[in-house]
Length: 259
Image (cartoon, rainbow, N blue to C red; front, side, top):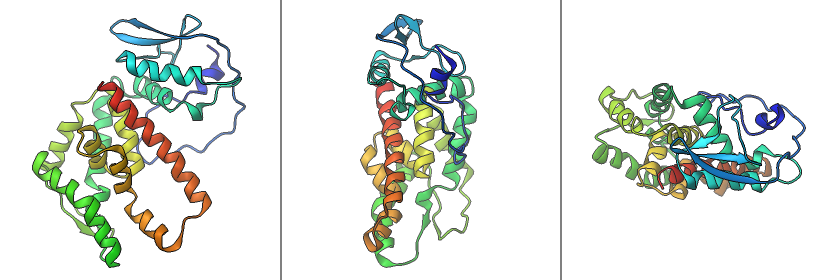
């Protein structure tokens, strides 16, 4: 597999939440394979291109926990045209990140996610206007209550952007929950946390307290309220659609790992 084709499917490097590397325009590599297959080996399911192992950017075999996830990734490879477009391969990118950047350092990834819980989106509330206050309460209060009752992790709410320190015991309970997931689930949860600004929303999806659609709507209460009043410009809409695609891929990975 060529270096260009490896680069096309994602860096595989674990990036702390909120750190975004500037895009670099590169010519898309040409498709170099015909057949895409799956082979179970070593207790995992590996992706094969013309019988040869796909390698991550870190040169590890691209193999995942089960056949269902492998098949979904294989479909991304089958769907490529004359060139390989990484923008259409979010599941492959997530798998690369899990293998190259998270396996072997899951504790560091959990710690990074829990940092978000310490400043979780759902804890910072508007004081006005009343319509926005009501929408935040509608979408966020049930999740805060769930964290308290089901996770034993009561969280402190704050007005505006004034920092509200969270109890160490609550963060420890949240950390314990995230610590139960494997590298592939953590890769998905890290993406979902980064995109929503909320570790609670990501965890609620993982534990089936919320659907992905419900979590996405909760993460965009402020944005949707503003758009309902002032409209949404095309550039903002395009950015949101890109983020939603990545969020949906993460949610799908999470579901397939658990399938």
